[in-house]
Length: 77
Image 1 (spheres, rainbow, N blue to C red):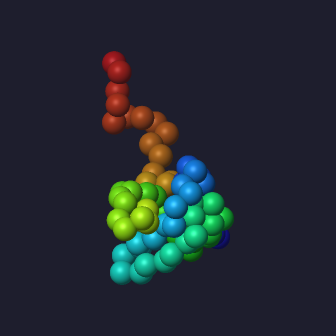
Image 2 (cartoon, rainbow, N blue to C red):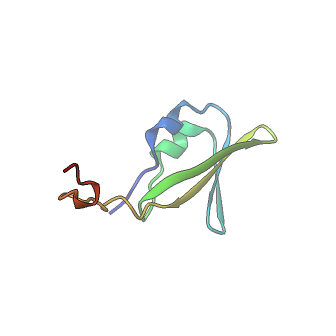
Image 3 (cartoon, rainbow, N blue to C red):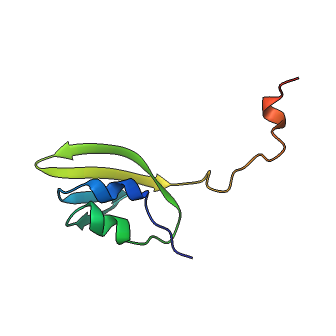
């Protein structure tokens, strides 16, 4: 299964550098990042700007399937 980053990155027109752990991947812009696929679910941890490039730190999204259907942690009674 492949995963994609949050699609809001499509709006970035500047070059983008993505950091995932020790790996660094460069993209022409947010559109090309939005089309990229990843082997595991990822989420945007932080976004910064440096030397005319957008730096996006991605982390593994462990909460993707972490759903509490019974909601007993948030009891309203």
